[in-house]
Length: 221
Image (tube, rainbow, N blue to C red; front, top):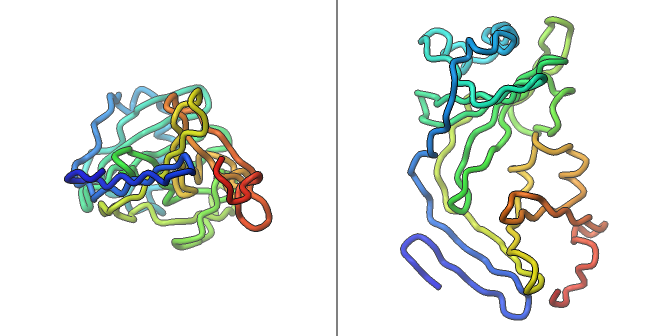
């Protein structure tokens, strides 16, 4: 099937479909947010990072700051739009030990997903960032910070892979590794292929030594 923005190909005999989407330049829908002042501990963690993270320093200087999306006892989720690039950023802040992890919110197959770009403490980040600068922050004790919070998001074409294994199972959508890094432990992301159900839950399939999911012998499921 072909439409203005999507090419949909059914792979006969495999129960898998491929969708190729054109770039989407529309901004993500804004989420309800509160003032950061409603959670003082969040500001106390972010303030020391302003000297090391240009994005946070600019937000402080122009008075815009971060918007608080969600806060729990041990973590908080904040968001902001980088005025220089127009990129929506989401920041996951952990209370103990204190750390901040910054994600770009990017479009993939007409869905908005997080992509890890920066961590204030590599040892406290679930994901392993293999790109971007690596430096030592001496305070409060020496630790590695990695990545670049200023990386912009540029809309691009995306490929979506879905499968319907049985008539009783809901359609599952393949989730590329880059959208799980920093949200799931790196050991799981490196060892499993993940598929997402419509309710948001994930199905993980262990990869074999040759990189295929176990049980994948090339025959139709």
